[in-house]
Image 1: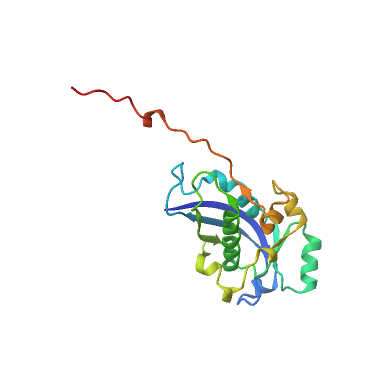
Image 2: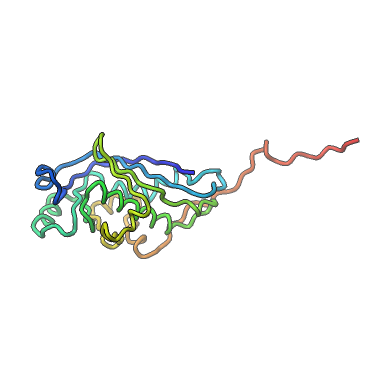
Length: 209
């Protein structure tokens, strides 16, 4: 079973070493759309793969960290990096070039780490990321699967190498969320009281004659 959750963010980047001079030499922006697909081998006690409401917390905040932010590769020149940080309070430094392909990998790795770092309380501990689709334009997207996300040949993605600006962190519901994730402090889903609909409750047995 697979479920899908859609997110959106606006961000700018430069794509180094690509074929287009406009993209590799000029800062430009996109209206990104993220399709996050989760899968599980069984359903939880709410008969879901994973409650969509639970994806409105740390996962939503993480993706919102890219919104109206300058995204740049941590191998950029010091001059460029300094300019981005001085002219934008919202930025994210990444261990890979911020292409649609690499951003989809970053999102996969981080969301999976968030799921792994969450104490699940409703029988949903088997939920995991299936894939991530990142739309850069209306006509083009990249899709990342598990084998892509952890393929060292494409560039290793470590949580500690994904750095958000202080302003981004301040705007999260929990400004310490990223530090907690990197240090292994567990997130905890709310405890759910099991309820049995009246129609499913056992009915008194009637004697047969």
